[in-house]
Length: 507
Image (cartoon, rainbow, N blue to C red; front, side, top):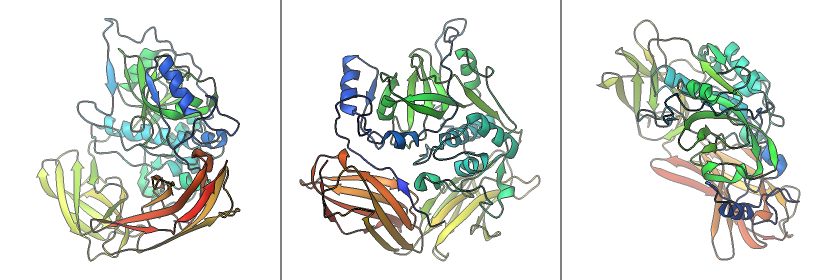
């Protein structure tokens, strides 16, 4: 992990503003929007969230598609010849969730990379009929090596071309840091054995030519797996909480890439996976009306994978999980075979193996005592003991059995906290921990009635960070502010906290 300076736009609990669009200080009036939605009997709900007080510039960094939809989808053929209603949702198809965890692109216009990776990961599980596959591929390597830029974004067609030519590597090899730093990284050798960790894609395709004029063609393609698609984001989309979204805003913010994962004929909507974290929308997803003006589902890209006869996946531990004591390991494989589970330090060769104790025909379990291991990050994968060689995707996990040592401090960046604070302010945050990195970092504000408001900043805590906060997201008055970091160990959450600083907000 590099020492970097981080610039994250951070805010919460937004005040009502006099206009629905972005006002003079570039903030969205969620209260006015909520009233407009009620008055018009809209089918969706708006709410303040971690994005609603962002400036126009900050919002644009949560987008990033340089290819705009054409807004020409024809829904006249959306139903089959018998006019029966259909629905498809890859989050629950045949009782199985075929999709990976919703991710957060953070402070970087990398939506194209996240949409492409989410689509490939889901397609891999669906095409192989192996729901445990979920490859955990790297948006960072794709974005950095393909030509994306945090301040500008990228082209979905360029992402598809890159994936077809070079494939993708796993996130354990190239963890995502750009969302925390807001800075581009160079294309590099992310891990020593990178060449052996490439996930191949056979081809990319558009289900109905350059642009989708046929909703039926899009639906038919979705039956084989999700599609990467683009949309125009309007100001009110930022505040989406639940329901079937149909924009009422005239304010266009920019182009965005997402993953199309399903549809519903009777209620006329698409199901879309976003990359703004699981705390946005419906657990990271949004239902978008066929009548919405965003152009959703008009420009689509799907992927096909090479044929393969056997698969194996490490199900537990979860990727980047912190573990203590005895670690329970679970692996799934596609057909009867002999497998072992290997554990190693990143960048090293084989370290130790665990024999699979089969609990079912295609499932094996293993236990591993971590107490004698050097604390820190490890990699885990499953591999066949017979030919032809079959190897799972690599996952990372962190071993921590001791009480960690943590230090945490912050100071104002270019202003005095003795004076009333106005607008957006930035803090220089310094962190230190041993023997493992901190897992989470929070910024907390306590008002005069001792009500505490907290916002988790980012899961990757780096030694030096610059973190921003909008004081006009809260009423004028006196507050206490501080930071808190955490590391789980031995079934407990260990925390470090900075001293509380008394401040005054006056906007």
